[in-house]
Image (cartoon, helix red, strand yellow):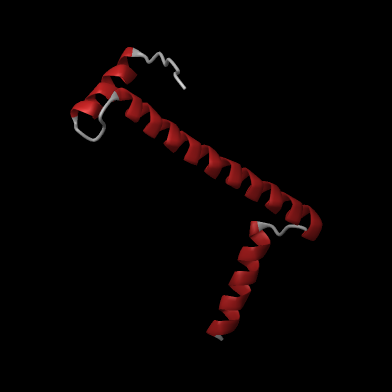
Length: 83
């Protein structure tokens, strides 16, 4: 499948520098590598959003605890241990 991609001059220069550096054989390889990285980032984003939705549902189902109450409980435990 042939697809034309128009890059800004800066991105074109960067891609050509990557090829000159020897890690890639041509600009197409650079673009494919960049798209794979984007694909991975989008998958991580999707997983993170799913995790947030799950946490939100858990909070609605089980309730939440304030940071102040957790810190107060920790202080109480520390006080008990110091006695």
